[in-house]
Length: 454
Image (cartoon, rainbow, N blue to C red; front, side, top):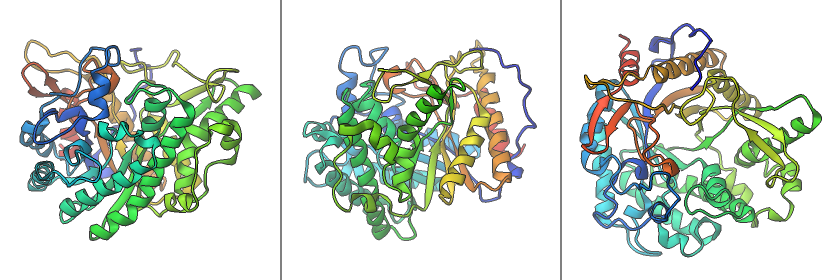
């Protein structure tokens, strides 16, 4: 990590945001729950992927993770004591259905019912994400998201969860980061299910977006006063140089990385320029699909971590564009640029391009190589600065009129970080994976002071 040269901006204070601004942390089921073979849970694509040698850097899996399945009361107590008023979690589809057309698993439904009750008892508004990458393996065996029938299976899952939890959960996120589901999992092969076919990835993306569009009216039918949205991973982009080639490459990348998702969600269809680039890899679209995808949202979730710099790369990949690694800037442990202004720029662009209505930062956080000192403390000053600077940028863009209504830090606890296994730590709470001991890091103590206005 490079040493930052910039001075810290005027530190943010909670009182500078609206009284009803939501303050939370986010997690996901496979990354924290563990209990991979308990109470009727079946295999997910991540169980299969992690069991494949060489796919996860440290050879680990989410089989135990943070043991949140058994330790959630302690985790929620930490969140309550931190001053959170909202908590974003995801529901493990493999806990609910074990076969196509089967009945929902009561033990799985009961677990999430207890989870929601535990949040409400502690003053945490539940924000449920219905799909955060842990597709049941039995559906992948039938073609996964590339198979249109998976849309129907997803709707059965959505129906079961919203019927069970809809009396207590108002806020629903249909999908987390469709880009990662489609491209990282089915084109780059770095995430489950580990496929490397561009056309398949684009078909996956279309079916994920279609399942979102079809789920929204179903959720609203089952949940009184439902608020439904989707969480997208988005990056502000810049060209590597002022050359016409690099600027054109940035526009190609932008068409697939940004507009491929936002344009159809807001009724514009897939961008024509991107369809011209991808040619025969374009997904099969049935009549009525685009209208379904464009169902009005109640909010847009934005996951922001870093900007991307794009260079022209003839013959490289489907877009002939390359994402360059950061140079001579502050970075986090994985080499991600620390760019608080990028958050403000991204939000301002989305508002200018689409006027989506209420937005929420559904993920924002930083990974560093944390160490536990002899006294048991975790002095993660870089993460504290990261949070403070990003919240300062958020404060400023909200003052300019961009309608952001809440912020969820990623993540409450250290967890299984997908293909990185347990080598990366994003949590405000440190997890000792050998003992499952929880320790509030200095960044978590800062967030607590911020939220309590101390």
